[in-house]
Image 1 (cartoon, helix red, strand yellow):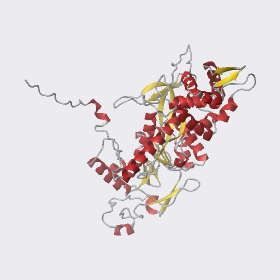
Image 2 (cartoon, helix red, strand yellow):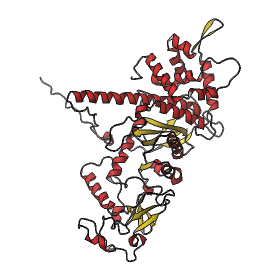
Image 3 (cartoon, one colour):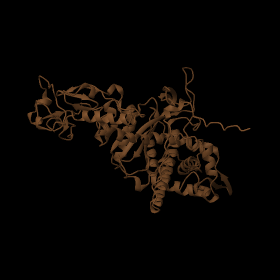
Image 4 (cartoon, one colour):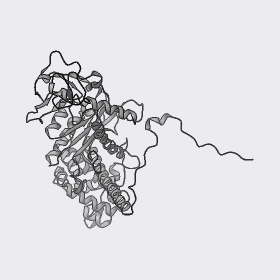
Length: 509
């Protein structure tokens, strides 16, 4: 069902089931103070009101949460505590009661270092996992991660007067269009880990499996690693983790190494500072996370990735060059052991090259590249059968596919799922995290409201995905081809070009 257009009653039943699956209501209730006069508003009803407000595309204001609860039927209001009988009279929930309960939750989840507490992480993880249908949880282990900006409603502080939002801080965000430089903003970084399908595999719904909201004072990659470690600890296997250079440029001990430790396979873009030749190991040249023959042509080691606008002949030429470069790469002999050591062999021994230092390779077909000038003093990689490589070599840039080859390009292209996830939560026609969407201060309250919005997004993505599958089955039964999506006619970078106008009609007299 489509949450944004269905009746409120349908919203309520589905969202109550989501809360039951998540198991977060008792955790929130345990954070509220006890004693004194009984509270009218349970934590479960408060969270349900946030979900209802998000499902109706309301701004993340507590007044909107109260309106969503007041719009329920009388029977539902009595059952949920919105309408209570006190001293023989009916009492409807007030804004003061709702704000007091929310403030108590916010104090129980408060953090001093700008990062979510362990309890808040449990609540966010539980809500998002509950929004993923059981039939889709194991559909694909691959994830695309990305972060985006979330501007705070409060103004930045000064030396004389601190900001009203103690967790917000200054950060950088990219420009909003082609040619626009990055700019400063005051707020938070929001990270999403979105499920993607395998390369050339069946389509999967792009559901957000994990979410992290933290102050811009905190480095984003380590917080996402902690979130993925919790996902792995819950029994979910990890496959490819697809990320841009904002993650791959982080120190290896905060991103690449811990992800490999929990079984993830890295697919990421490289920062320009990490590309090209970066020293040697056992005589082999280290470049782009791989080890190559010391006689590899330098121009091949300096291949850069193609831009988005590249098509046709440029793609074919680039693929030919990267394929030629792959012939000089040392062949893998063994997988990493428990300590991370692995063994590689000379490409001439594996049949990819012809080299005079390996006499048996000279009998290979002539279509193989040939080393014309081998090293005068052969290093270890040229004289030994195999060489052992320690885990510290290229631990930051090593990844699943050879960078920037065709296989890497096709695999990395799936990262657009993370960009689409960020786009949906910034869509002005739906939930949008633009300034003013949330007028609350502090990390805990904003996190709860954003998490409710992302959970609603997951339900909508599931509805749209199943509707497309049903339409494809209907068309297949009629012998029709699957419905294709409309493609952009012009590249986004061509927005400055003059638009072609329809010629004016001729004037007849």
